[in-house]
Image (tube, rainbow over all chains, first blue to last red; front, side, top):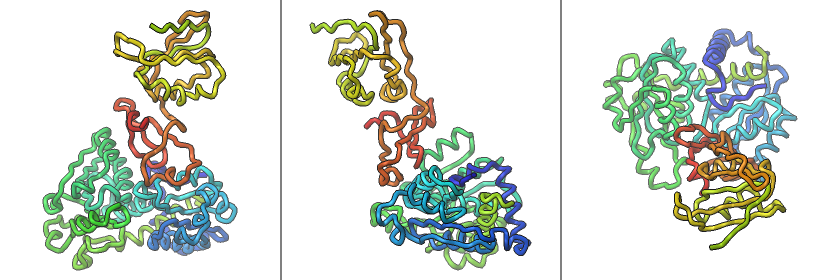
Length: 303
Length: 146
């Protein structure tokens, strides 16, 4: 039995197999419509995340399975003080697979260690968000045709943005990747990431202004500055509008640069960018569902 | 000068930083053993100026060298048999430490679930960096000992 805690849990070859399956599911949905008949997915969301939860649930429904779970901690036994270990032991008796989102870092790992069903980390605090990473990788692979040899710009909240950390960890395994980190001083990428890049001799640079490097990017990954990641509201208000991608900045970008965003977008991407063919963040949502379908089928060992 | 006699069977922890012997006494769980323990504080040392020494009359197997290596790998461990030093153990930073200290990251799951084992792994031996097994928060041995 396998779990998914980090994008690194799967080898590059296993990921390629997963992406091929996701593409096949997109092309021929009927073929997979009953793959998970009588199987149940438990969505254990200790903090609200409608988008990710609905993506998981739709993925399971598309495979013919059904869904149980809770959408926030207040409607579960957690509000009575139940531990993560006990919750997953109970859920293991009902469901065949679980997706867990938790505000505390490492919680899905605790669940996996006590579970008799596969557990998927659906985001743990500012730590990892592997299925978002699988979504990002599938989007890049589908729209660029490859996953290596590109300059990847990551912009916004690089300190608390778990999607960013997971994506960097996954991309470093492909040849010819270069990173440009674009963030204010307060939201710089954590040192455990830069330590890892130095160790692996992967080129990266840290800049403050998006305009300075947008012209060199093959891919721009925008993130939201999230209010819930701040201890102090003043800091949030001061930093939230620091980076806004608009039409003027897009004019400086290469013709084939893709713009990705994990969504929800607040105002870091101006709506006038949405019609630009390089803006692929809504396509990304669809790829997220297909990659979660492929992941559920793979972890349930049905393919 | 105060004289503390030789021990026949056991081990001597020498070159402990002055004032740290009581911490080590508890961290090694020596308070839970019923063997003889001599705690010598602020002894004169050519190398360190002042140092602490612990003399323990029990089998070396009772000593958790991983914990000791994590606390201070510069401590000298002398194994005593029949009143003589028969071996000097070299301490290294352990690959993993369990339940010796706590993760200080308020976002870590261990901050709310008290029953979880506190596990740290040696992520970078050269730079002496430990990381929490759950949240990957980075620590130096010094910051973890706080």
